[in-house]
Image (cartoon, rainbow, N blue to C red; front, side, top):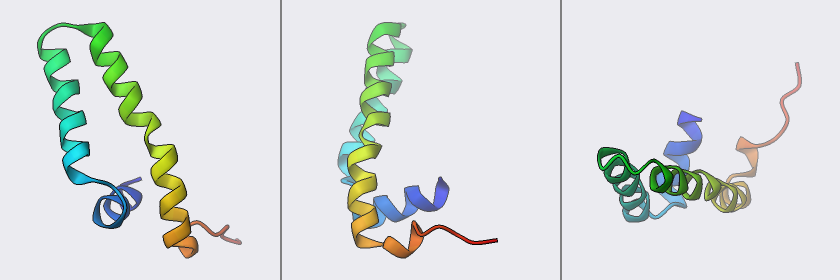
Length: 68
């Protein structure tokens, strides 16, 4: 996951959006708004599916099946 995160942040993901999402999650938690925190976290985590598709197109060799 760390390699994927570095890969996507560097070449696919909008870093400003990621930071804004993290801030929204943090602010919701700090404000004890658990429902908003959950909604923000779900939005943030679900975004990986669109980013994953872009990353697979750009770097298919990172996603090939490894053979033992």
